Length: 152
Image 1 (tube, rainbow, N blue to C red):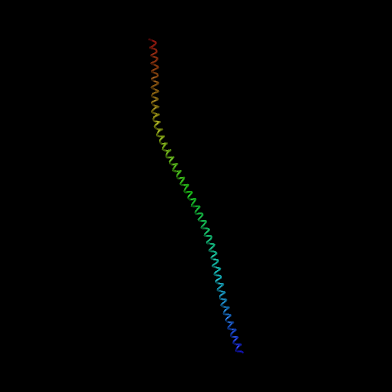
Image 2: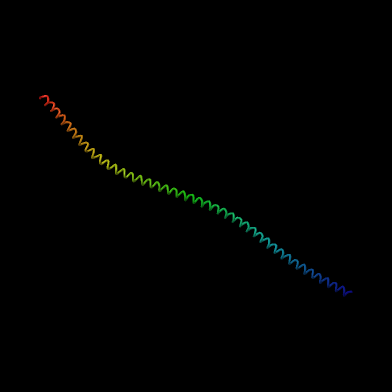
């Protein structure tokens, strides 16, 4: 009986040792599971952070794209306006050139007319003097004629 008792005791100790080995394995597995869960949690947190960062980056990209398009449109409008002003400037320069040409032509014409006027004025003055002289001669001759006619 003692032998059975020793055998049962040995078997119990063997089972207890198996249980302790099994518990040790279970603890090791729990530690591994906890480590893996911590790793999963860390990776999930990092993924969430990266997702948030990606969304912010996409939002910024959209904002920058909209701003870039708006500035490009503004740049095109300003460029078109500048082209319009250049065309107006060319038109103004053409008008100015035409005006300057006309002024020069009118100055030349005025100088010609002034020269002709001076010539005509001198001739007129000479003719007036000549007319006065002839008128005086005519009056004198008329007076002489009348006096000779009366005598005759």
